[in-house]
Image (cartoon, rainbow, N blue to C red; front, side, top):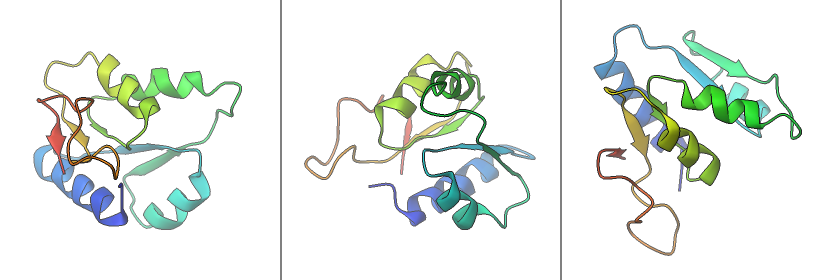
Length: 112
């Protein structure tokens, strides 16, 4: 669902709408993220938490002004809990391969 194209298109969207955008990458596969996104200077990889303290990542993610979501309930909750009024939340168009659209994706989120 969340292909390399999805992430590249999402980053491009944010960079077109947010001046001097900075990205914080949270993942349970941070090594892949470092390889894929590694060349971008405006990315910080958040790798301070593990399975026992991962809930801190959820709190940190929810405090970001904008968000590029994965199709996971973890990132969904972070987006849902985001309290910024003028936030940009980018979501995959489909949440799973079984359905084209999902009730989980809020109407105000950008679907890419």
